[in-house]
Image 1 (cartoon, helix red, strand yellow):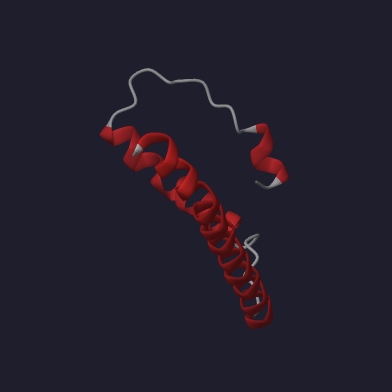
Image 2 (image 1 turned 30 degrees about the horizontal axis):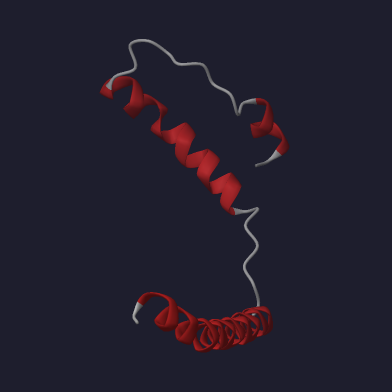
Length: 83
């Protein structure tokens, strides 16, 4: 959030807010959305590619980890519960 909006983050409930009041507040809402969108960081192609590689690497590590655990504990489970 921008510094201006941090102070306005807590807005107490207003009684009697209806559709007419919502329509009146729409331009202010759109203006604040545009202001916040200017602060959004859009990643470069290099950043997207590198984080994707990291995600796939961890995915492979987790798959291998759970595969090894399954190979270890499956015989134990079968010996304890299925004999």
